[in-house]
Amino acid sequence: MAIREIVKEGDPILRKVCREVTVFDAKLGRILDDMLETMKKAEGVGLAAPQVGFLRRFAICEINDGELLEIINPVILEKSGNQIGAEGCLSIPKIYKDVNRYMNIKVKYFDRNGVEHTRELNGFNARVVQHEMDHLDGVLFVDKAEKK
Ligand code: CO
Image 1 (cartoon, rainbow, N blue to C red):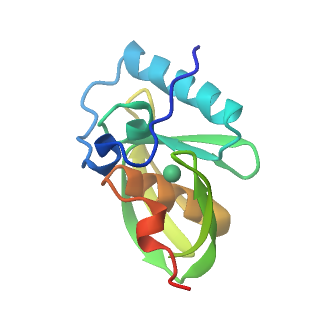
Image 2: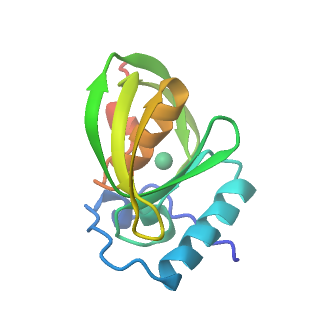
Image 3: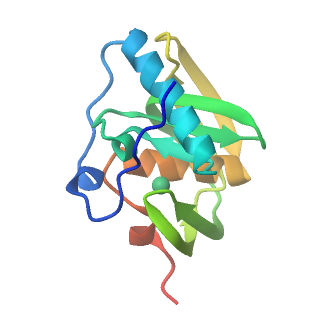
């Protein structure tokens, strides 16, 4: 595994809409492994492909205080409720702002082997997934932050 450089806000790559993953191969697995190592070193709880320079729809999230969730081509099927809480982003160091998110989501995604899964997430877990999914559409949390 290797540490990848994290793209910072201001780089146009963070504003692009990513394309779907169509090939589930060893290269995808290597990038995901690198992303985990990169996220851990940076002490984050989520990292999306464009943040390490890949304009494809996949991301990793740490949920349940230590469980790794790899989401490829994720789609939110159901959503309900809302929650306001502080977020940060490895691409925007030292900035934390409150963001309004859905409290509960049901998300469909593929794993690195191309197997489809559906999972219900809530609270902080749902927040992390929504934050990472926004990255796949070129959206950053500061765009959605509550106005003070
Ligand atoms: Co982020």
